[in-house]
Length: 364
Ligand code: ADP
Ligand code: GN1
Ligand code: MG
Image 1 (cartoon, rainbow, N blue to C red):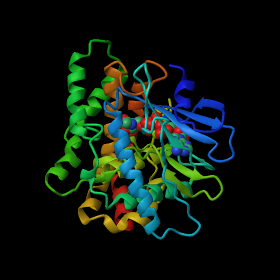
Image 2: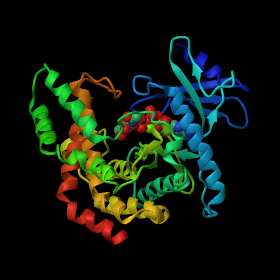
Image 3: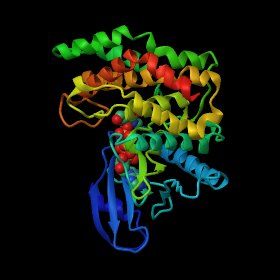
């Protein structure tokens, strides 16, 4: 498919000057398009990965509901005068729809570009960490009164760790390739933690944690930072906005932010969980979101950090064993190394359970 054919579906004025692959996403393919016009000279064009999202038109429906709601709430909330908060806008295609179905079956959509911002793959300092936490807190606040039932389940089983564990067992029993010390380390790691996998889903079933509208993927590079002020200016990658537990988001944001060497490092032995960053992210988060967290929500915060690191390791490891069918990779061992990174991170979280629980108690 010629990308230019997709670009043209979303432009009403101006000429295309440039179109280049953009960002470091693991799922979709993202392009930054530049036009020769004065306003809105950039936009984001994305080909949605339909191997992951089987009903991309439902993803777009959720995105429109969530962004309309967030924009409406943003006007009602008193945000500091020095703060901007941008909600990405879905750009309508020439035929009036919110996406374009290409003749080859690929699914394309365009989103407004949030100008004068930058996204980092890792946390650069404590202030950045607080802003990342603030961004997630602001996102949850803006959607806190959007009933989760208003959204469709666009990715069944997403963050349901027991489901990933079951799939892992199926894949492992069909696995016929060679073993290695790394594979054995991972299988043993998962075996020792099969009880852990149920912690949040059990709490949900017992009514201790309630479903809300969540982001699903609030890792560090999905939070845009204003170039000038250093403040968080918005949160992107809204494909997984759907009903869920805020714990999925808090756990995911912490597992992503508190790993200073980043999730793509090859030096997996050096991975550790940084409690200073953890404190700063939670401080930023709670500065906006404390009001809607219950006692029970606080009780499960430590479990959520540990679980989400473990869960992502399990997802990467399963994908490796399954022949890399889900995440984009740069080589055959990529998902195995990514899994080792997350498992090392989980170990580091476990070894610091007391200080992490203390941080949560102090900020409560
Ligand atoms: P993926 O689902 O593959 O992770 P994303 O939606 O996160 O794709 O986009 C990939 C990258 O493109 C982001 O990390 C960010 O750097 C950039 N990006 C995406 N949307 C926008 C936007 N609306 N404004 C500015 N940058 C964006
Ligand atoms: C994927 O699309 P991206 O790169 O922001 C994945 C997340 C993982 C993340 C790990 C829909 O996110 O769940 O946490 O990779 N998204 C989906 O980097 O599976
Ligand atoms: Mg992303």
